[in-house]
Image (cartoon, rainbow, N blue to C red; front, side, top):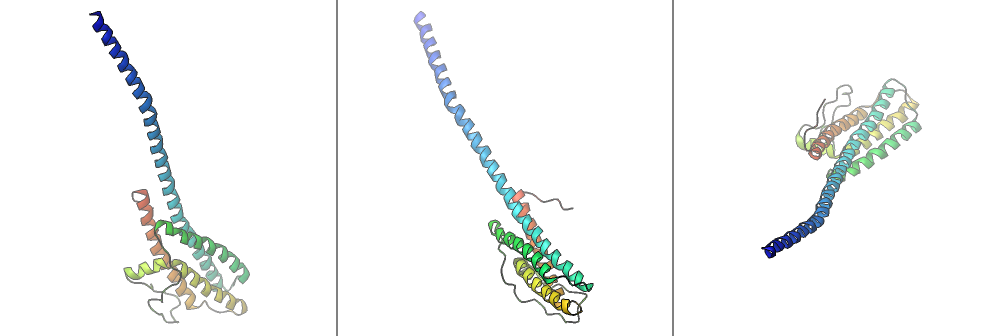
Length: 210
């Protein structure tokens, strides 16, 4: 009987030691696994934040570029042509930021072309107040989206030509300038839709639209 008790005691001691050894082994292993999962989750969140920041930067820099061109046109229409050197300085800075942001979209699977296609329709030179949309179907809208940077560069050249012309003589803003700005607006509208869709994909749900 004493021998049996001693045997049970030995088995219990061995079992306790085994459990202690297992706990000593699996405890740190589980902790390490939990830390690795937390680090992976944190890295994933940082990648999401970086991608959303890239998408938003293209939206804001494109908006700033277009705003600068539209303000210049407003000054021209008010017979207050800006200094061409000042115009070049402002646009050069904004263009660099927008171009960098546009090329950065390649990380998000969005590629912006460098040269625009021909306009869909040619409007009469007498059409100076009401500019109709240049693109009328989904395929052409997608093309406009892809060439937003090229449209902005094209509009910049047209606006600058009028800045130079109006600095020497008074005159109305050319219809080519208005058409170029309309092309930019259409391209940005389509691109902004694509950017918003991508942001919703990254966040895993719809963005609240105010």
